[in-house]
Amino acid sequence: MTKRSTLTAGIALTGVAALALTGCAGTSDDAAGSSDAAGDRAVKIAVFNGWDEGIAASELWKAILEDKGYDVELEYADPAAVYTGISKENYDLTLDTWLPLTHADYMETYGDELVDLGAWNDEAKLTIAVNEDAPIDSLSELADNADLFDNKLVGIEAGSGLVTVTQDEVIPGYGLENMDFVVSSTPAMLAELQSKTDAGENVAVTLWRPHWAYNAFPIKDLEDPEGLLGDAEGIHTVTSTSFADEFSEVNGWLADFKMPSETLYSLEDAMFSDGGSDDYTDVVQQWISDNQEYVDSLTS
Image (cartoon, rainbow, N blue to C red; front, side, top):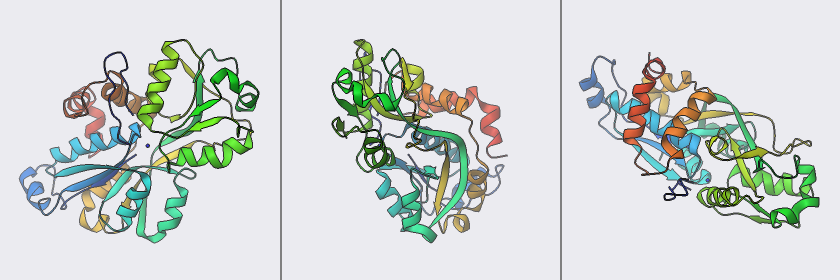
């Protein structure tokens, strides 16, 4: 999914994540020492274009690590480039790997060149969403009612796991070959969702949980009786093979990182639902202040 771009005024919308760290920090009481130790190179967080949960987690960790004395850079890219970059150690890690399904091909392709630190959220789910008052409730009904949705299913970025699963599994599995599957971008999909729901019209889009759109729009998931979109997945942190040696303290923090969906929704809502600038610094700092006990627990 491409970097989430904010839509203007009436369309308060936007379109996951690699974290590159520099130098191993010292104790939290020695900020100067941490900064010096981290000075050789910046911590690079590779962020999937448009995957808001990854953007949110990456911005959060950027703020946390900078407070601990690390220099941090976020770099946006599509998943293929992110995993290639981590395998070549151009990035240190990504915070938005969905397993066991969505990004499994990348993990298999790069194998021993990636390190999985485990899931920080275990409630991720690929979905096909429609307007809440749509006359259908299941993907098994979509083909027979395609005309009510302008014969269109709106997707996100080409090459994303969600688009791949939709093309390879969902469309043939539910006989949707005659629908126009529009592969565009996450911002374009969200703009379509905004436009159609505002107009009281039917719309069908590829989406995923957790996502702030479920709080922002009157939408529902279509049931997936064949299970073609897969079961709930975990959102994992994946690093380069050298990361633990170079940044052992941060590696430990990230290996222990957990973020429940409700906490994630809160951060996403603060960052994305009201539109505005793509500079999230102030918003994230305010959210940290409002959730200081949780944030402090991530590095304790």
